[in-house]
Image (cartoon, rainbow, N blue to C red; front, side, top):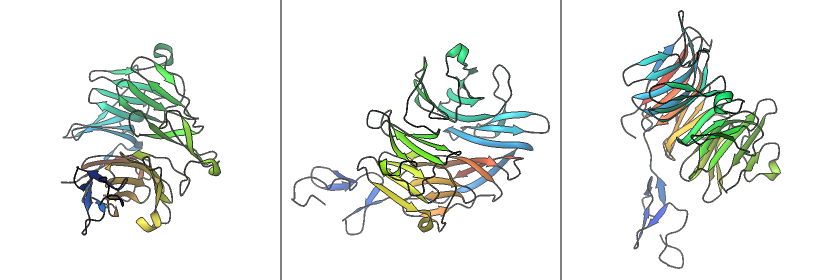
Length: 360
C-alpha cells in the first residue's frame, strides 16, 4: 500500500509503517484479509467482577489511584458504627480502612493521584496532602503558599509537575517547590484532564448552574478554548451531546463521552468522529460519568445506571457487574485491572467493584 505515484512512502494517517521496502501495520493494528487496510486489534471483554462494601452510614468512595495490582488507593468517606474513615488501601491481600488526617480535622477526601508508591497526593477540605512513603504532609496557604480555593481533581506527570483542578477555571501547578496559578481560558468548574504529548493538557469543565461545557488546551503552545457550548459557531470542533464531564487520551486521540455519543478528536489529523450510544449499545442517552483505558482498543466508559461499558477495538459490551443497586462515581483501568467505586442507592455503604481478566 504505497502512494498513487508509486513513490516509496506509505499512505499517511493509515496506521502504516514504512520499513524501507514495504508498509507494515502500526502497533495495535493488523492487516485485513486482502492486505488493503490496517484494522484495530481487539482486546478481551472477559472480565470477572467482585464487589466490596464498607460502612453503614453516609458512605461513598469517590476517586481511585492504582499504583499497581498490589497497591491501590480509594478515597471518600466511610462511616461505621464505631469510627470514621476517608481512605481504603489494597495491599494485594485485603482492604485496609484508613483515616488520613494530619493535624486532625476529620473529613472526606475527594481526590487522589499516585505518581509512585511513595509519592501520592490527596485532597481534603480543598487542601493538598502528600504521602512520601512515611508520613502525610498537609499544605496550607499560610505555610506553603497554596492558593485558597476549590480542588475538584489532582493530576500529575511527575513529582515536579502536579496540577490541582478547581471551580471557575481554577488550575494550580506545583513544580515541587512553589504553587502557581495558570490562566487556562476555561471559565467553568474544571472536572477532568488528559495529556497529549509532553505537558500538553486537555481540560474539560462544566457548570451545573448554567449547563455550560468548555474544553480548553495548551496543545498549540498557549491556552485556548476548543469548545464552548455557549458559543457553538466559534468552536474548533463540536461535541454531539454537548454535556460532558470526563476526558481521556491515547497517543493520537482525545476522547469525550457525552450523553449522546463518544466523541473522539484526532490530534494528528484534527478530525473528529462520533460514536452514537444508540448505535453502540442501543441506548439513546447515557449519564457518562468517567472514562479510562489502556489503548484505543481497550476503553471503559462509566455510566449510571448502565454501569461499565467496554470497547475492545471492534465492539462495545455492557459488563455484568455484581450489583445493579448502585450509584457509581469513578472508574480507573490499568492493564487487566479495573476499579469502579461509588455508593449504594441509599448512600449508606461505600462500594468498590474490582474487575480482572487473565489476558488483554
